[in-house]
Image (cartoon, rainbow, N blue to C red; front, side, top):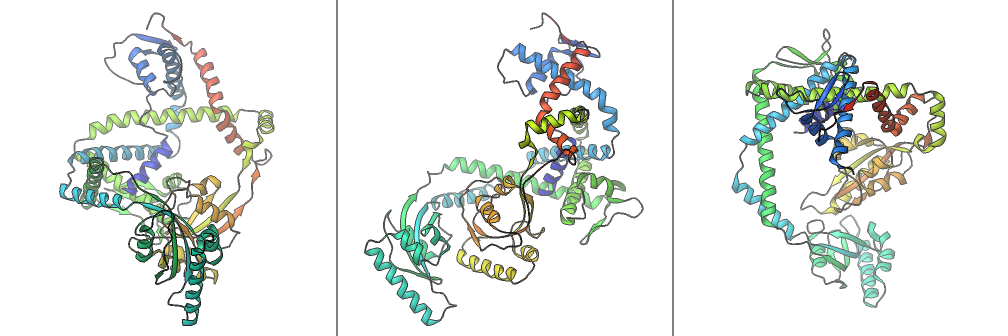
Length: 564
């Protein structure tokens, strides 16, 4: 599933194809609806106008339906004209055929997925088992806000050290019972990393702490303080501040979600079986191995299926620049192309070739159209005089600012279920000691990290927004480090504090900053191409609107009077 998804992303990025775009001209035999617009080179029918309005981004803007239809038709005609102007140049660009075939593979994957989804079945007994498991998980999802004092007394300490720890936790308990502030005492006496926050733990749930600690915390009423709790790691005193009870789950909602999930898994399994079967019948030649890409010396091919060259190194480099830099990622993308090519063969064998031809024709036109719009904007921006760019730079200096970036590597150790988080923390401490003693951080990440292990924990060159996608804890940790500095182990909670889909949760983070670039600004004398790209991004909508007006006027565009 992951490999096929990667191919879809490649195809979308290169073709600019979006399957919900309705603005491309529709060629529909038998359209006898009245003509609503004319221009030099063609007409627009009422059916085409309605289709254009349905897919027009401004369809929900204020104004009457008739006014919005006029704008949608103007946009439709302008795009038709751009395609006519640029089609030949677009379709003759290097590797266009390869990109077009990638689009066809993407559509084949979608057709096969739809057919297999209809064939997939689920084991209802297994569905019931999963529903019961999730209901039980909901029942145990009560969370607590607690404060605690922790005094370390583990097996690595001598008897005298353990005696000192016993005396210290006893003194703390007496002072708490005497009315002293719990948070203040935690800050002064606790050996936990939470001491800096007065011993605060937010979102404590079952299964993520030692059973003795958990039992004590969950047995308290708000405001109540436990006695001394002993675990293999030391002594604890816990105070419950607040208990959060989840709303009762709806069984039918959970069951429906599980059935849909299991159907999806079953369809993926059927697809993988189909790919494997096709791979046994078709000759597949892969020009890569564990050491990286090994293009065919004669043809430059990286992949052949059924005797046909599917992708050469030069073509692949137009998709993945510098593929030798990250060979594991490059091989993953090639494997996605291989599987999709086999599914393309499967489409023909399953009698779906006609459906694919129809779908591909429309998708190809949309891809050409979007590329044509991009070419039009680039041609306009390329003709903008330097004086205009200078004026843009003076008026909008913030657009030319390049934010500071961090190149970071991380080791992320998730908390496995039914495992004491403290054991994970001790493991993280050992890794930090090794890294600070000179061990290669990237090698440690490859061996231990659950995030980006194949990249040696490398997250790339990230600005503040890029860091935030991984969550606020990682952002704070990385920005506080100096280049080459390695962080202490940082506990990442199960709660999501900012971040996007990549956000880290429930584990221990270790970070190292490789390099950091300071914020800077683009200079017209050295960065003209980049400034033109920024100018296009900022002013593109206005420039294209002017282009549309000029081209429609030149073509004599007019709406036909009397058509509602």
